[in-house]
Image (cartoon, rainbow, N blue to C red; front, side, top):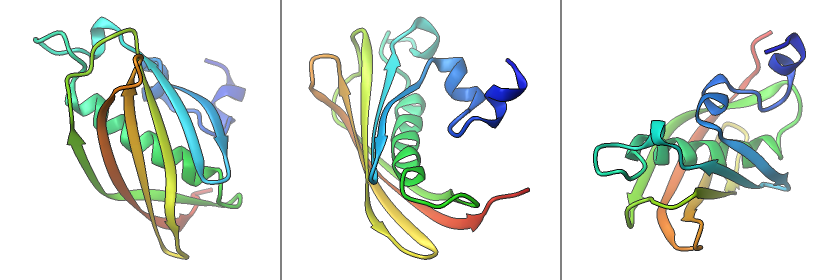
Length: 134
């Protein structure tokens, strides 16, 4: 890791650890991909539910970053996930979008799909807006 990577918008050590990558990011929408590796699975050889919740949070957070000015950021205050089917395959795709961008509260939704395009989970995240720490 170099100094520049820490200053890059969207840099996140946890994302790097699990292999999560932003593919597209614009106008309140995001597209992220996560390879399914052994380290994110649980005893049934499916992706751990906590990782899927992380994908919902990450997809909405990325979509939010595409709409806020520098100097502001969002902090997750609520997260709701509905798990629809076991997550298996080669990768997961997270599609996020902002539903409501308020001055202090933001609501977004995400759909998590497997590599066959089948929905694995859906979720809603609420963020509180704040000024970034210096």
